[in-house]
Length: 224
Image 1 (cartoon, one colour):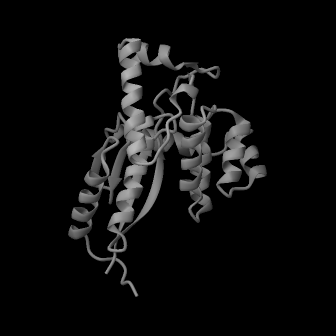
Image 2 (cartoon, helix red, strand yellow):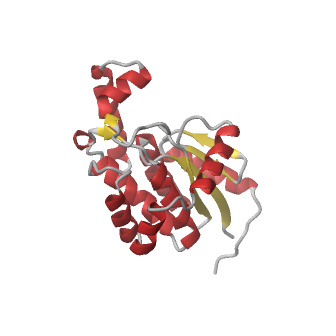
Image 3 (cartoon, one colour):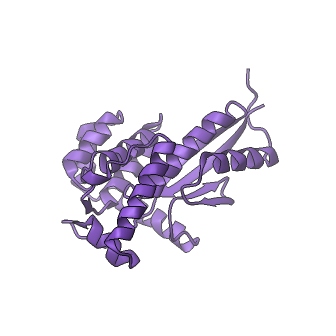
């Protein structure tokens, strides 16, 4: 028997610990298969909802926002890169020069979920790679259209969405729902609408939690 879990992954495409957490979660899901499977949904959260269109220098932003020195920011970056490498995610930190607004990326992710067939997770991973590995701007229309295309989505429709306010209300409503529920930092991984795992945890933490929660849940599907 296979237990199927619902996982809401609340995150931002400009959050390095979200990239680490997703890679760790995917590895954990591979380890618990086929006994446990999951329906994964990405939910919007903006780390910097007031970020201007021109963005902000990464070091200036981090030192100001968190009250740390440049040396501390560099040490944090090295730790992030090491943690990413441990779960197979490559941080090209020397390429990530600026912090950008991510609202349009979340609108596209909302649409991708509606398209089904794994389109949302493909787009999410492509956007994380574009920003953290390649240092590209996740608010740039051309990057977003290209990422959507790479994820198997219609580029014409993606461009039309970005040129309009499509899914803006839906995205804002979801953001508000999670902040009102007490989510103020990401990643926040919510399993079956009741179990919360916070932060970019190691693979073993996710694996243990998945097994424990699945063990307490009724089996959903019989395997062949």
